[in-house]
Amino acid sequence: VSLTETLSEIVGKSQLFEGDAIDDRYRWDFMLRFQSNPRHVVRPANTEEVSRLVKAAKASGTPITAMGGGTGSTGGLVVDNAIIMSLERLNRIHEIDPKSMTMTVDAGVTVQAAQEAAEAQGLLFALDLGARGSATVGGAVSTNAGGSRVLRWGMMRDMVLGLEAVLADGTIVSAMTKVLKDNAGYDWKQLLIGTEGTLGIVTKVVIRLRPLPISAQTALIAVPDLDAAISILRSLEGELAGRVSSFELMWGDFYDYVAGFQAQRRPQPMQGGYPLYCLVEALGGHPEADQEAFEAALSGKIEEGTILDAVIAQSERERQALWLVRDDLIEAFNELGKWLAFDISMPHADMASFIDEARANIAAVYPDARAMFYGHIGDGNLHLVTAGPADDADAHHNLDVAVYSAVRRVSGSISGEHGIGLQKREFMSWTRSEAEIQLMKTIKRALDPDNILNPGKVFELN
Ligand SMILES: Cc1cc2nc3c(=O)[nH]c(=O)nc-3n(C[C@H](O)[C@H](O)[C@H](O)COP(=O)(O)OP(=O)(O)OC[C@H]3O[C@@H](n4cnc5c(N)ncnc54)[C@H](O)[C@@H]3O)c2cc1C
Image (cartoon, rainbow, N blue to C red; front, side):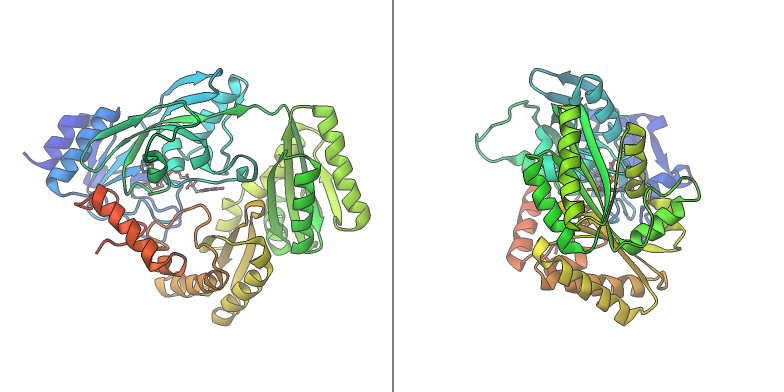
């Protein structure tokens, strides 16, 4: 029996695509750096089918890669002659349990659908990111997504209580527990999280929920330099007693470019020309008192001169308008021509010297390149967008070296949150020790000896 027949028998003819019938979205690499060439695309309906598909892949020696919303930006879905298994039909929200503060969802549910379902019950699914409309819970678990509220509620791994996954031999492992504390042996769920589909396929998740904040205070502030931004972050964290949930920084050239581009459609929330801009948000439960405390904390800093200018949202509409400057980026980036994105992290103390060095390294190879920094500064996580140099493998490599050599000097990470995928794997040894990489390979070999699950991502097994 051919693999095509086996796959078709498992998912049904209508859920198997081959050759020209494969839609472009399954050949997708968000950053357009790589060509993806799936041989089969399958769309299972449930965990049982996922398990049978993995067994069929293993029996035929064909690699299989799970796909969520396709918003990952490191080439994690790029395959050659493999099976792409889209989890888009695993899209049920099974339960919201307000007493236990959990929700149980299929892996293919989008982050936004899960957020909205929780909110309808007065609860918060705290993960938030610009790709919320397409990114899936399974993708967020598999990349250990971060986003704009890590400062307060942590990354995706901090929100996972229970997990169901299919291993490389087709075994379904399930711990759909709602228990917060569980030290009964190895935490295999945490082992799978963030492994980019290389150790298991996530099929269901129990998510930890939080009380839904009923007050939000949001401000865009301009500051003179990075030190001022970090000192404002530290003092707001104390003064607002842990309510600061987002602290996003945009360097002046980034703000001027993005807000300038967006001005074609809506007014800029603040004039350009300042050195740095921070989007600060605190979430709480006492609307009036929270707003008062927030404004008092900021006005102290305006008087001191650590804040040069501030716009404080007075309504939900104004709040959303401020967030658009930070979230509505892709069209503005596309206007730059070919752009590359970096996602790096480091201690706050090393950030200023890192940025100087990375800018100098880039300018040394491409004097006319644009290099604009922004990021989840509260978490020490910087994003960088570069544009200008030729769109070829040499230029990508030169820019990678320019940025990651500066990351290496400060012992930072080449991936704060997006993962390694294909894009960054040649630089793994710049950010992880040889012993760490060998340990990762030992785990991979133990769980997936035939290298069936998303092979070649994170590292090459040899
Ligand atoms: C506009 C924009 C903003 C973004 N902002 C952020 C941000 O703030 N923080 C952040 O962390 N990321 C961000 N990202 C990156 C991306 O959204 C996240 O990595 C997201 O978690 C990917 O989810 P997905 O469902 O799209 O996964 P996909 O892109 O489909 O897959 C990503 C990787 O996970 C694997 N995978 C997917 N689903 C499963 C599964 N069920 N089981 C096993 N493996 C699986 C895939 O094989 C692949 O290796 C952003 C992306 C965009 C486009």
